[in-house]
Amino acid sequence: MNGPGPLHAELKARFGDGVGEGGADGAFEVIRVDGGSIRGVASFLKASGNFALMDLTAVDWLGCGGGEKPARLELVYYFFQLSGAGRAKRAGMRVRVKVPVPDDGTAVPSLAPVFGSADWLEREVWDMFGIRFAGHPNLKRILLYEEFSGHPLRKDYPLRGQQPRVRQGFPGVPPFGRRPDVLG
Amino acid sequence: MRINMGPSHPSMHGTVRIALDLDGEVVRKAEVEIGYLHRAFEKTAENRTWNQVVPYTDRLNYVSPVINNVGYVMAVEKLLGIEVPERGQYVRVLMSEVSRITDHLTCNAANAMEVGAMTVFIYLMEAREVFYHLIEDVTGARLTVSYARVGGVTGDLTPGFLDGLPRAIRRLRVALDESSRLLMKNRIFYDRFRGVGVLPRGTAVEHGITGPVGRASGVDYDVRRDLPYLAYDRLSFEVPTGTLGDSYDRFRVRMEEMEQSVRLIQQCVRDMPEGPVSADDQRVNLPPKEDVYRDMEALIRHFKLLMPGHGIRPPAGEAYSAVEGANGELGFYVVSDGTDRPWRVRCRPPCFFAVSALDKMIEGGMLADVVPTFGSINMIAGELDR
Image (cartoon, rainbow over all chains, first blue to last red; front, side):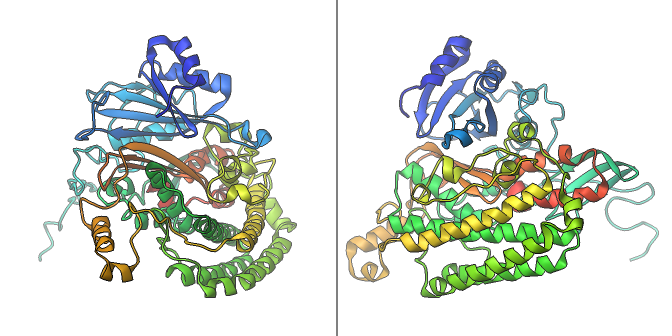
């Protein structure tokens, strides 16, 4: 990673300690931000530069060899400038924001009030990693079924994890197996 | 009345459930439920070597598999700092554009069929068949191509491909022309598509929607033009956009994009230099088999690339690489911990964002409008659910 860019300096001036170190990775500026400041940073990016939230994912660093990680889980937000692109015929700025999330159930402020794409993206992160988002209107699983237990993209969820069978049934019909009055 | 459309429904492309709250024929509220084709791509990728992930990427957007392959390996090549030789870049671009054509043909054909235009479906499918035949000549498969490898592609273009390409393009142009003339000014088609499923530009940007759906709504963004990769900065093409963001615009944008893809293909064939298609890099490329049998160094290199624990080992780090998928910006975020298996692979699926805005597009419309709207988004369940 190279040195921090102009956006990092601006965010640091506005949000102080909430903004950690910055760097660059090819076309991206990479900025570390605290959980508490992420909504402020996101609102600022949207208001001042018309950034769009293009992707949100997480990385589970449990068991990774190389070096000290800020927390077990790390949220990765991608903000791009889409609207300036056409006229300038080149892409606008691209920013990767990383937010460390400790594995103790702390919730991260949801970006759903700020960006429309955050709704489903945060649901997927909750589904796969178990990171809660405070203030999300509808934080339920999106890719897996409701009764699924566990969060599969965590490193401690086994590759071939088995799930208990879901009990379904109607009144008078047992959920599994045959009706007791039928022989055989 | 609350009624389910899907997950098993003839018009739901793949398995998706739309729970509709209907008031007569008007959709008051819609809730879209996805995940029926979730196959744990990202978890699986953490347990395979870097090249072993490539067949899984085929199964993401399975109607334009080359684009997924190329997108993924480009992210890994970024981690390794490998540059693919000129010819390899042109070959990748050419195959990607052929894949894009098959994807748009499928989408428009299915969309037209669902409103009753069976003939157009057959015309476009027939054109698609010719392209599948070409793809099969080069890669060996129609859909599950696994064409890209880290550092290049599996093999160069074949004579059969290059000979068959002009005819395929002619057939395609005939099919597109006939379909346009049958549909674009057809009263029924126009009434069913115009003003239906409108996605305003602001909503599209809010939801991060790119690709034909976004461009039809006026989001003038194309990864090939704005963040050029491979050979796209040396090729000239237009990026069609729409104004209203309704299903008609989406259909029309796809038709025009196919014509632009043909332009790109013709330029690639004209400008492609001779040379190798894969980078001759020790870290990723297998040596020629004749050398493996004769030369000790080649044998060691072959061994070191294929044995577990050895193989392609990008330095620890992360990379994000975006390509213009048939549905929009297809991004791959890969994290390496220095071993021969990825630590994390994230696929940014472009249709995820389009489908997340679907409820806004169909609320307030009629039940019958759900079908052209949903068809024009080109939701591919493989990419949506991964």
